[in-house]
Image (cartoon, rainbow, N blue to C red):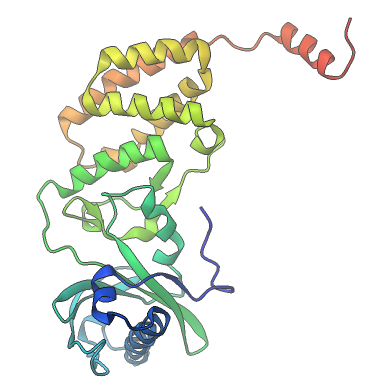
Length: 302
């Protein structure tokens, strides 16, 4: 994943489809620039009041007129450790408008990751970097999630578990307040694993495809198919077994331990046992063969 480079770019994404419909045949580039100016004016006003030591929830943002001919309204929702979120209504359309209070590009850094975890993260549309008092901050427009299922956190964590194994996506800050209706609403904690042993990007396309099939077997609770794939992988693609061994170990760590359903935990333990057994069957490299192979590579055949 490419990190957002604010030294080169100032914005990322595009107007939400609902707003694209509002502009009709108007020039999209001009409409996008108008939208960014509108949002940046609000974000700058937010920081101007924040600089006066006003509590974020008490900041009174004055909407600078209409946008695309539509009335705009803002309702404060909440503040986290990094940003503050507003429910933003533009005509009949509702969005989440987040303004980061710290010098960070936040969601802009992880926007490319949302394609890897469709159905898990709250859809981010467009965001931009702006400057206030010599420091750079960012804002972002996302879908607004109205509902909050009781099992939203558990449902999201199961989705993330499989995204962890099949896509290499991880999360640093997993707790119920960051999830709503089964989706992650505080996205800056998303990232890609980059460990020495379990990085899925080191596997070939064929091996990644096998990993996805194994994860699907866990989803559908198809133990017979899972064991069959594992048996073949031991002989033909042992790197898959090694990857699954570490991925499943990490995915059973503290991040996924909180709020997990008992049924899901029990199921994981059964499939992990198969991988653990398969890992033990992978023979360690023969040092004699390795030495001979190295001599051949170096052109010293005997």
